[in-house]
Amino acid sequence: MAELPTIEGFLNVAGLPVVIEESGPDSPSPLTRHLAAAAPWLEVHATPSEDRRVLSLRGSKPHGNIRFVGELERRMIEPLVLTLRALATGQVDLDTPATPAFLQDLRRDVHLRLVVSVSCPYCPAAAAVVLRLPCVSNRVHVEVIRADLPDAPRVHAVPTLFDGGRIVGSGPLQEMKVVEGLLADVPR
Image (cartoon, one colour):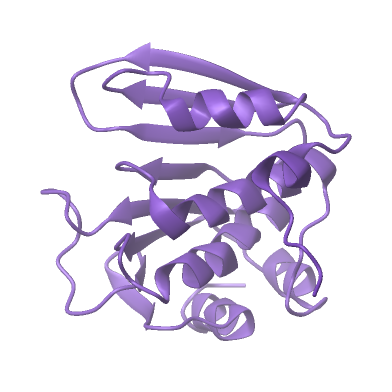
């Protein structure tokens, strides 16, 4: 049986600079300090505040805005790590090579909010799917927000993906279904 890579091994690759802008209690958090120690190309800019934790990612190449709102823990760390590596290397593990071509048809910016729970078995995979999109299109902006925050959109199930006020998907999400959902009501 092959051994699974550690976070340190997965992030210890050549890459362009990526910045995590973090605000929140005790910033920088142990998580972002650990990630910065593992990835030679990662820089953390921390602003301590008494408000909730917010991580914004900024890569060297054009991409959409990427934010995580609320503490990241358990398996919700996985989509963050995947996204950091994709921003640094430019290698995005898409489910289908057609995704960038479809997203090129967007004529306006799309602002997605993915509502997640750290105890949900589907949320890490859904977040990974949605976070690929801003890595390949600067018209797609994603915010991953914990459902237990007071200002999170009220949902009946997690994960739930919103485009503005419209629900694009709920439960397990597939990349092409999300892209088709975005293009359904978006002028091209």
